[in-house]
Image (cartoon, rainbow, N blue to C red; front, side, top):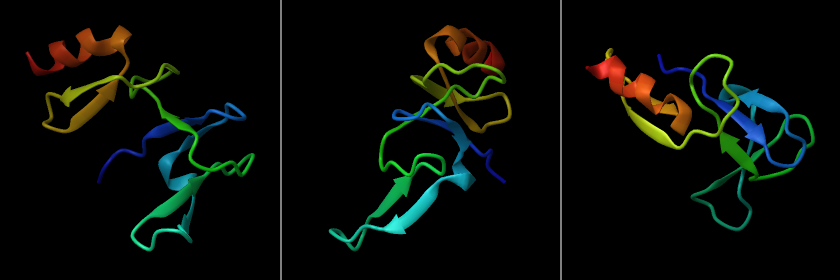
Length: 86
């Protein structure tokens, strides 16, 4: 099972886990879907957050953790990711 990643809405700043984001077919592209904020209902304005508990920085780095699972972290926690695989 994959971890439920956290996302912050750029419009209302509410943090939601991925499974709670709203999803609907894109009326302009049958192969795409629109993703919306469950709080303000804005569409497609999200920042993926660092996977380190309590960190609200945007995820900008990534790599495999010691368990082999790909992790996303912010620049401040990139050293944690490197140490996890060392």
